Amino acid sequence: MNLEKGYLEKKIDPSLDLFKEISHLKKTKNAIILAHYYQDADIQDIADYIGDSLGLAQQAEKSTADIILFAGVHFMAETAKILNPKTKVLLPDLKAGCSLADSCPADAFSAFKASHPDHIVLTYINCTADIKALSDVIVTSTNAVQIVESFPKDQKIIFAPDKNLGAYINKITGRNMVLWNGSCMVHEIFSLEKLIKLKIQNPKAKIIAHPECEAPLLEHADFIGSTTALLNYTKKPENGDEFIVVTETGILHQMQKSSPTKIFIPAPPNNNCACNDCPYMKLNTLEKIYIALKYEQPELLMDEYLIKKAKLPILKMLELSAKFGL
Ligand code: 13P
Ligand code: SF4
Image 1 (cartoon, helix red, strand yellow):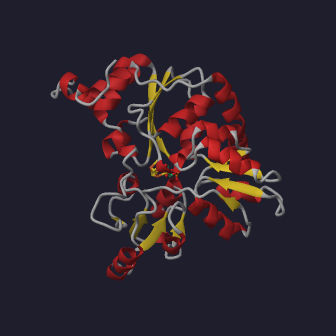
Image 2 (cartoon, rainbow, N blue to C red):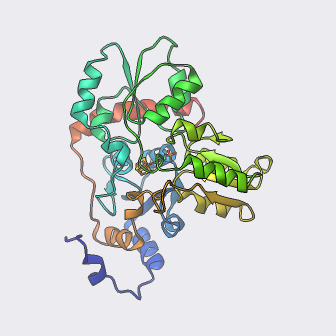
């Protein structure tokens, strides 16, 4: 099936009610849509579950659907396939990658790991299955601090691929994990200068930030957490009514939905582009989701041996998360 540029324009009848068509396809095919908070509002609204990386992995593991359509990026769909290999996993656009995952190629990481023989490897879920297969435990921004703290203080640890999240965990836990030099292009684009100006203009607003941001920005944050933690923070009356949100803009949809009278201001990037939108997440569209469900393509296929190897550190994470009540 040809999914190249121009295909959708030619094949989709513009008068189709895509919400209705997608709902119908979900029912007839016993399919579910798992969507990350960074998806467009329309996609979040047709999803069966919206969540952060941990929540999405947990949902994928327990899903009994015949098809999981993953409205997110490649590493998330891979994680779903690893946890539920018998289920058909669809990713509406296979080009939906991740700059953070790209910043950690398997051969270079393998050499890095070999040069630190007495270290265990804790890896942020935003990485390829090849990197997961080289890891001891996977973490997400929801559980990273607790998982790191579950190891003895003198345990030597490599943390990959996000140097910003790694540095944040080192600061919180007092550890000295060796950090891989990777980062997320979206979370590194925020302008500290503009953030400070915005705070001066909105003195009552709380600055809430994702730990993938650089340390100087995090220093100005009233609260730091995963997308789910940020969303939950904004729901609590004691945390106020105005927020400057330092993460990808997609999360604002759920924040505004849960707290319609509160004010949410997206933190500005360091230029005039919309670079605080993740270009990979935003490759997914309702049209591509409709096509994917209709033709059951593009399907995410993985090597069985890789699934087996990459699954162990993810299961370890799920086990620890359950123990911590996450
Ligand atoms: P969480 O939703 O797990 O906080 O991760 C954010 C992110 O960058 C996903 O790509
Ligand atoms: Fe990757 Fe950053 Fe996009 Fe998340 S926001 S998918 S970490 S590039």
